[in-house]
Image 1 (cartoon, rainbow, N blue to C red):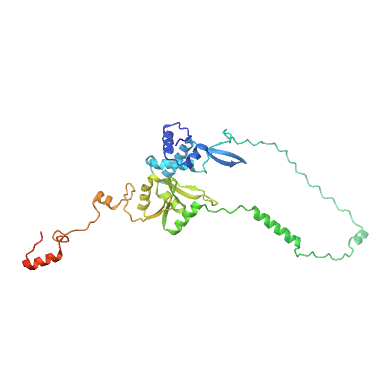
Image 2 (image 1 turned 180 degrees about the vertical axis):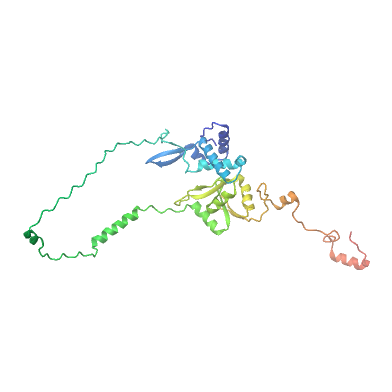
Length: 330
């Protein structure tokens, strides 16, 4: 599959060749056509480059080194897996373009000079005029007591409060719902609460939630996130399907029970007690274990007990009586 990526170095050419050989249709569309996003009230196109991925890969290698991994010995499948996640992930922005194909440049805000504010000094209080005796008499007439206000709310108050509640309810953001894909994953995880669930999505197997965080600490896998319809992204790790047996073996060898869900919704459980090659992480069958070191126990057949299943037992008994217990099987 031809991808619209500009490879300038030998390393970038290798990554491009891998993506052209392994990218599924949706990922190829993101790489070639970019992803439309809304920014500043405008529709822009987000396109990522191989140069941007190389920087992303260096950052991921540093994370692996901080966890104790030898960065120079990371498997090619892991690095190429980074490339697929970099171009597939929506949260990492590359170069932004306008819809007419020109590169988008953010407008520079205009700075306007503010007029200096002058605080007005409060006026000085003026002395009150001296009042005469007649003024004092006129100033204190007996006045009727003011009526106390009625504290009971009126119908208008109730209507105003109801209208305000309606406006607040409309202003609330709509409730987000879980995506069907993630709901299916949660149903399987609920059925196998103590297992690691790996779901096949296109060319990748993905693990979500706390199990993803656990495997990211145990294996050379990058912890990212996926939008599953919730308010925040769900933690996620993934690995290519063609390296799945290796990662399955490593997960099982670490003592985890594994449940694998395929594209056709087939679910299979792999218990942790399976035979696992600790060097390659592959799951070994009984025949492979026998060829490996001969340690598989086989039933013992005693040499002094002949196999008489091919003989007619009644005929043997009759001959034994005629010959006087002289029959010897060799």
